[in-house]
Figure 1 (cartoon, helix red, strand yellow):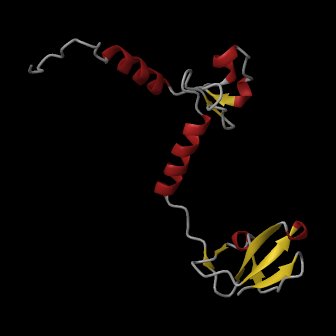
Figure 2 (spheres, helix red, strand yellow):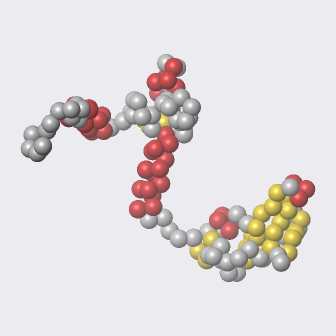
Figure 3 (cartoon, one colour):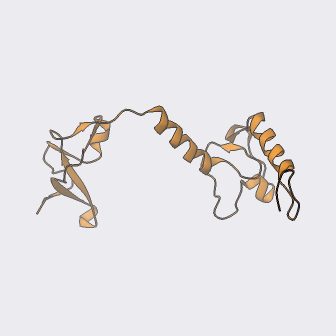
Length: 139
């Protein structure tokens, strides 16, 4: 059974998300206590600061993976512009300019690199049409 503290009355040796601001992570330890917030409707787990380990440094592979994930959320599939905020791709399926013609401010997006546009154009031209054979295909 973990101890339960009221909001702002916790032990100074315990922390919640403050661990991250201190450059630490819980490191797999079980929560030492719990603090109740908003009159007991919400709570946060508290971890011991002395058992916390330093945050692992960001590697190039992690950074590339995060950038790829953010690119999927911020790139319009129609015009390939990468916006500075996440796009509502579930509802309209594209940016507002492609969806209904609302002009986008030039400061809200970056223009896709030329090689990406060229690659998209080349793949669209080289895709085989249904029912046709490519050279070298056997029946």
